[in-house]
Image (cartoon, rainbow, N blue to C red; front, top):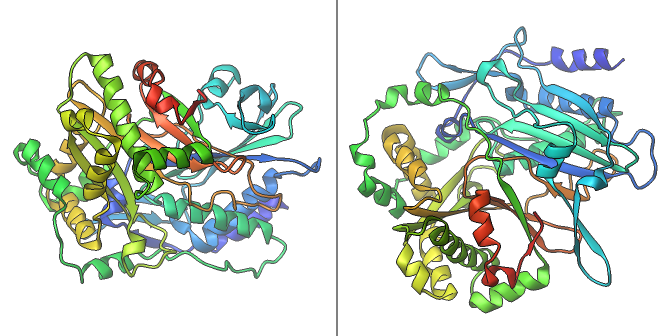
Length: 470
């Protein structure tokens, strides 16, 4: 029965070449993943049925996201494309795993109010003690699947983990949240073969190209900063081969030294009030992290870095006429290059204002310039990659705010998730903010070297607001 239904879905996929956008190609080799944790509160024997999950996945891909079953290539015009060939589909890699320990064994607890406990999933402990040392990551290299799904069940436990990994070249954060919700929506409506998504995705990258053809580029200040650091001296690459160069790049390995901090809603608001009540919570948190990580960096390396970098990605859908349902990459980065001595000497209020001056002045004109940079000045990307890290020369906070993304609404027909967690993600120094519906606070997943975190967790300033989970 299931095989017949899956074949029906696959038979509807048409041959097509989907031309990738410049920002799509710039992310090649990276993946986007997550761990969504559901609780069976009713004792339903069919809770999170693997057959339903698979059926819904094939349906949403076949009907709305055939790009997920395509393969990367270079088109006749030298552009990067995803080739969808019904006779050579890149099939999803799906499996159900059983762990001989209860899920609660991998939980960390934090007291909230009146004895209530907030639960967190400790991924590092899971890999150490579950018998599974790693989970596969989506990649196009070596003919791997572009969609990897693991449904993880535990002994004598009501919890089920849905692990999903997808290639960044297809989706940015906004698009993957939409994909997961659309997948869940299709799964909930499997009994209606004629069902159509309420908000179907816009997959055609042409909408982005057409929009930016009307925009005049303005170079953001951080581009000039990286040029001045040495990007101009790097080897020039003809724009005609950029797509081929990036699509030949090796996979970017995940960074496995992950840590988690939790901020209650009350402590988060107190942090904002203490830093500058006129600023956003995100800017106030970034200011505290920028200074405390710099201080930890100085202690670890016993030297003062020249630069302290703060990076915020921003979703250009909110600043353009591109539909919010666009399914490709339309997220860009704003970087604040701050002199480390200024950060060390400045107040949190002053640091927040400095970050704001660099990272809040984002526009489609800046985005157009960044597209031009990828296509014509790729040395700037390499220089940024060298600079954005924690080292004796640089301190780095890359802060992605996911707290307002519709992740708790991913309901496959059994209710939404109880806990959001994270797989390992790329690049040291990157950090992700998730909302925590258990107490209304936030979870901050940090890619921080263990040695550096040993210094950071001694920061009295940070510990005024955050609980260290692991």
